[in-house]
Length: 451
Ligand code: ADP
Ligand code: MG
Image 1 (cartoon, rainbow, N blue to C red):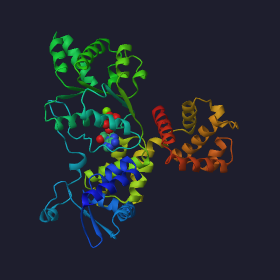
Image 2 (tube, helix red, strand yellow):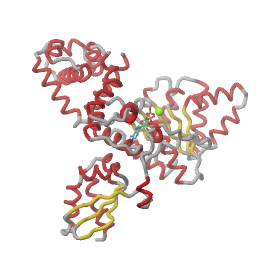
Image 3 (spheres, protein in one colour):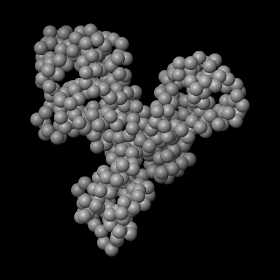
Image 4 (cartoon, protein in one colour):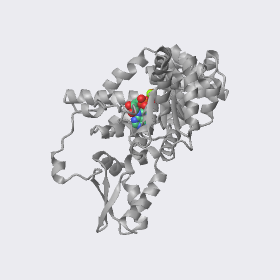
């Protein structure tokens, strides 16, 4: 086996062992560059990946290599960019100021209306968005055929816009402008229709949309209920669909839950592929944080990253926001980011909103979510349908409000040991069980919303 084959086999095994998000983030762009005297040299695209892989996966990788080549004794990790820079260049590189990473103004391409910031390569994949991501990559390969229309839905800040724009950007690059994508927030579509009607230029307006090869409509829920717009959208949709053009639609909810959406439009959507994007689990949140840090060439200790990922669960946008705040604050004050400092900043930005939540609101939202009554929730009934909600309620009272166990016990008509037990049980399970994690995040969101 040559180095290339050896490495491909190793990666193949690692891919099975790791979650997709982790594999894609840390190992996909690695290479085995050399081996000498039992030392295998592995190149990674940046310092971050280097550290992470060295800390977490070194043993596994060495084990796999050793199975194929018994001379393997040790791994050495090196960094190599996409175009490996010369040594001289490396030395003069300084970390760019923070603004350049997060705040840089990407210019929206006027042809396609796409923002080049959104790429498939920067989209972190985890169990919450796997299917949507897989569909996105498949669409780029066979436009208009396999998954048409593609309907993706999910809550605020979970990556819908990122993903649908990334499909457009990928297509633009891959087909070198031979295939024309166009990104349209649905409000823009609505205002174009209104403009067409007002100025008696509907034909121009129609032409504009029917000229494209890939039409991306973001947040379709805003079209629902506007009759003339829906009508026009339906015709545009049909014209494109019949010409085998690709249609990509995002929404904050599934088609059947957009009450005002006309039946014929709904059934069209249901004829394609529908995928949801859920709340990222802990592991994906860590991967996202790491990948954002990589983008801005910053480093934070694993403890700090762990803390952020544990505390900030609302959505990816909030995760990004908190990370940005922490980095910005530390840099401005020239401080090292300690766990304590990070905790303070998180407390200010996240818990603030949670603090104002009333404990009764938590109970109400839990009961509502599971479709049981408040009485059920605090009763001594041991039916499975009420035991889990009860434990979740106690967990949330502790987690969101940091109430004492005796207080929680009293509130729930239990003693404090039951409160402790419930909290600990859910706290452990929530990071292992994505289904449960998802439920809890939805309940949190409901609590924030009513707040
Ligand atoms: P939505 O359209 O669902 O409200 P966005 O696509 O605007 O959400 O995402 C919010 C922010 O989170 C964006 O900055 C986006 O780049 C980032 N983001 C969301 N999901 C991911 C992901 N899986 N990987 C990397 N960044 C993500
Ligand atoms: Mg969006």
